[in-house]
Length: 207
Image (cartoon, rainbow, N blue to C red; front, side):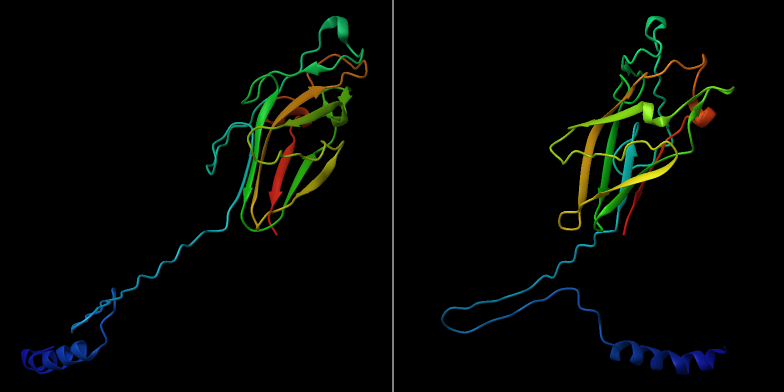
């Protein structure tokens, strides 16, 4: 653009800018005169809440991602193999075979599913069905106690968590135990990393 054109257009641009309405960021009110005076101004507020859904089973912190998968181990004493003595676990973020379980959501009822890929294996011919492992929920905070579906032999099972005012805030201490009902082949069944079908998957689902 040459200098002449710029000099001609600059006043036009200034005039357009002055004619455009200015954004209003505040309010004021001026009163004058005798007697009681009242000056009123207003401020509008808006709070934006995002949709959330949070699930924690084991190691983690509220509203953060954590890739740690806890390992619960049941070691059966030689004298108690298959005699029906319930075996407590070790491991878990709460130790003693127990984990923290929490669900938070603000979009209505939440479905919570529990899934397995079939019986635990010792990598040979031995298997132990998931029905031999129990989950006992107990109160963790003043929130309602979070109770999951029992671990299914295979596939998935689910429960519905009822929202109050479209909000779900439930938690619990889940303590796992091995029922030890049968004499089974020696070996380590399951294991870290989901070895030998040793992993249960929990999934929270929003509407």
